[in-house]
Length: 275
Image (cartoon, rainbow, N blue to C red):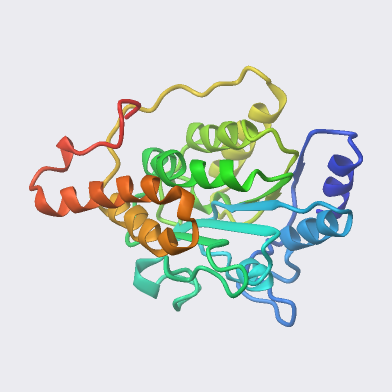
């Protein structure tokens, strides 16, 4: 992770992929946890901060909440931590409320920990991309990161025996394509992943997205699930007090979820023409 970060910060490459084992995002400063010994993503972030970077985005798409990473930077306004993960109302590993949407960080950085927790299995490409486009994109634009670290847990991939999510290689590529559009250097650090074929295909899709400047993934035409819409709206409610200029965006997401609860048919609900 340190070597990849140095290569990016020294302008030897614009993007770097760190194929690291074991994963790291559960590790805290004082203890290892969940297969994680050292927090590799935080090694990258700490090095960037030490070299003068002032705004770092950590994007964690591992199926499990990056509790260690969040805890390390919970009170640091220079770091925006975002995690999309299985939550299952606190019953999915790591068990507890760390990954709840209401877990937004500590003063003076409240609102800089963003958790979108799926309450059930099956979240796939359209759920993740809806969360990105409708909730996260405006936040990222306002934060304007100078450096991005991706905690790339491939256990959110289709076929993983532990994650229970449904991201495809195309889905990972679509997320990464959007992160590239922020025009910041990126270090992708491998986290969990327990289906070797799924990990291989997903990593290859990310690598291709890094290498090909015109790699625009195909559009995904599908409606997000009611479960996902409710999870996204719950996060929007939790963030509403801390991002005043973005409240119109949050309100749009919340109203969609309210419509969902009043409707017997989810097929009529959509965020925009893109879906």
